[in-house]
Image (cartoon, rainbow, N blue to C red; front, side, top):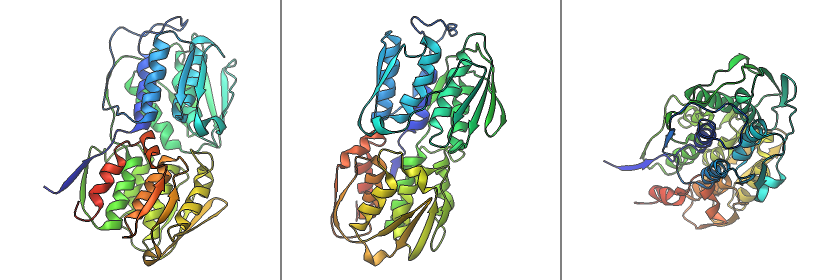
Amino acid sequence: MGTRLTAPPSKSYAIRALAASFLAGPRPSSPAAAPPAGTTTLHNLGTCDDVRAAQGCVEALRRGEKRIFAGESALTARLFAPIVSVLYGDGAVEIETSGSLRDRPTQKVDLTGEVVTVDGSISSQFVSGLLMALPISISKNYRLLITNPVSTPYIDMTLEVMERFGIYVNRLSINEFQIPGDQRYVPTDYTVEGDWSAVAQLIVAQKVTGKKVMIEGLNPESLQPDRSIMQLIDTEGVISFDATNCPDLIPSLVPLCAVRQGVSKISGAQRLVHKESNRAVALQEEFAKIGVTVHWEGDFLYIHGCPSAIHGGVVSSHNDHRIAMALGVASLATKEPVTILGSNCVSKSYPKFWEDLEKFRGDA
């Protein structure tokens, strides 16, 4: 049978589904129209930190609390901010965050008019929050305009979830939407698909070690942009790739490029700055400690691949789950030990990562 692994649930889909399930359920003290009767059932949500934070927000709001805790989940905070504003009024519900999220960019959007403009250059999550919130506005139709949109596949994912919960949005172009108001999210049965962002690390681990592992639970037709790892994994030689719409994939690509002789070039590096860490800096600093030269210049990341140069060392995760996982995969390329400080941060998205990564070591 060989070694088999099950992909962890997509936290991006899980958190969107949790927000939609809240909007499809009973909401205390909200002037918005009540949703239809029925019960939403969510399957395969997973237990990562970010999903637990979103679950906590939903439970707190259903209890009528006026303060919710999003932890370090940027998606949770950015989805629920416009949702609670539309439901309860601006400032009526306080959203608390922790860790590096307190220093990450926020946006204040004016919802008083019927044309709403949002800057999409930092994150598509602000756009996703507005898309989910505006349809429940009472007796108002909106036109949503996005300037400088990035990570547009994640907007597609949001619209997909909304459609499953009965919400209609007319997409006029890549950055313009007509959104009828006074809509109701409909309770539904929803299963969260596997996470391509997390599994990209395991797919690279297969290439680094040559060990074949069957990974189950992925949707080959998924809208998740990190599915593009499959376009790269079987190519030969150096990699040249534009990751502007899938910046979470970049850390996974660094160990892949590191075991290929030559200089690979990844564009979209500016998207790494406002994450759990400044990932461009973290990748430069930490991979240098194990013999891999990574150079960040403007919007480009250059990875100088040389398999024989990779060695052991002590590195830091920067409390960033994707940095920790990338370093873990890189450690498979050397017989010398690589100690990753703060490695437990992977619980943010993939609590079983270290257990699953062991399947790629030696005769595990």
